[in-house]
View 1 (spheres, rainbow, N blue to C red):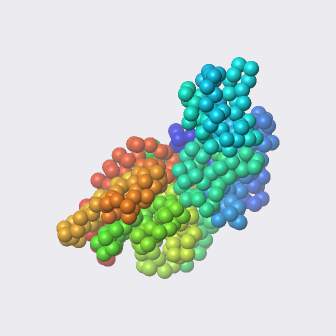
View 2: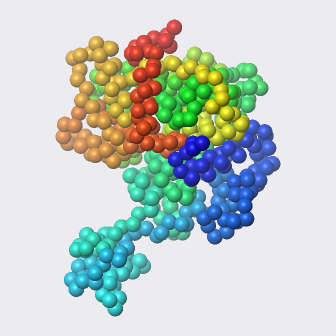
Length: 474
C-alpha cells in the first residue's frame, strides 16, 4: 500500500520508524548502531560506491531524526556525505553547439573562460567561469545551458549554493525553512530535523504521570494525507498513541479569521501571518513591510494558546505538513503554547513504530471547526474566510481587496509592488504552491489534495465562523 510520493520519503520514514520504535522501548541509545543494518540489510550497495558509505549516510539520517545539529539554528540540514551524486551545476556547452564562426560566446565572456577545440566547438574553462550567463544569452543556437541542481532550482529564495566540497550549502540568513529543497532532493541529502523523540518522551510521561494531558492539534490538511484510511480512523490512531484528545487547528483558523479581519479593518492594509515561511520571508527580504504583518498568532498557536489557558497543565503537540512550523515554534511567543511538532511523515512513522494498524480502527470524530477554518489548508482559503468574517461582523462598509499569492515567487512579486502601485489591501501569502496541502512534511502532494480539503470543509458541522467560535465559549 503506497503511503509516500517518493522512495526518498520512504527511506526517511524507515529511519524515523526505527528511531521511534527504540525510543518507545527505551533502547534507542543501546541499539542505535543496529538501525543502519536494518535499513540497509544486504551486502549490495543501493546507489553509491559501497555499503559502508550507505550505512554512514543512514547514521547521519539518524542524527537528524534525533534532533540534528544543536549548534545549527536552522531546522533544515544538509547531509554532506549524501550530497555527491548530482552533477556540478552551472553553465555547460551542450551538443547543440554547431562550432559557428561568429564566436559570440567568446566575445561576451569577460573572463576569457570560453575556448574552442579543433572542430571549433565551444568549451568552458570552469576555473575561470563566474557563471554570469552572458555566453548563454548571446548563443544563437541556445547551446549553452545553465544546469541547476534540484535543490537550487527548488529554492526560490536563493538560499542554496555549492560549498567548497561541492555539497549543497544553506545560507541561514536567506533560508525560510519552507522545506522545498527537502522534498525535491533526489538523494535525500537535505532533511528537516525531527523532534519525534521529544514527542514520544512527552507522551510516555503523560501516560505514567497523570499531572498533565497531551493534546494533539492537527492541521486541516490532514484530510488529504492518509488516503487509504478514513479520517476518523486516523484520529483514533492518534489517541491510541497516548494523546488525550485531538483538536483541529482549523478552530484556531476560525479565531484568526475574525481577529485578522478586525485588524485589517483597523489598519487598512495587512499581510497574513498564518504561513511561517511567508512571515520569515518578509522579515528577511522586506524588513520595511514587517509593520504590516498581522499581529495575530498562526492558527496552530492560537488554538494551542486557548488550550493552555483552559487547561494550564496541558501539553500541546502540533501535527501538520510544515517544516517551517518547526522554526516558528522555537520563537519565544509560540513556544510557550506548543511543546513540540510532528509532520505527517513523522506521524506515519509513529503509527508504524507501535505496529498500529489504523486501517482496522473504529472511526472517531473530529468536528471542532467551520468550513472556513478548514479551507485555510489551501491557497485562497484564508481570503475566503476573511470575506466571510466581514459578512458575519456586519462590516459591509469595508471592502477587502485580496491578493492571493500561491507560492513564494508570487509572494515576492506582490511584495515588490507594495507602496508603488495599488495592488489591494490584504496579501495572503503561502510559501508552498497550493498552500499547506503541498507542505514538505506531507505524505502526498498534488492537486487532488485541494479537492479533499474542500470536501472536508463541506462536512463541517459548524457552517459559520461564529458558530465554531461559540463552541469554545460553552
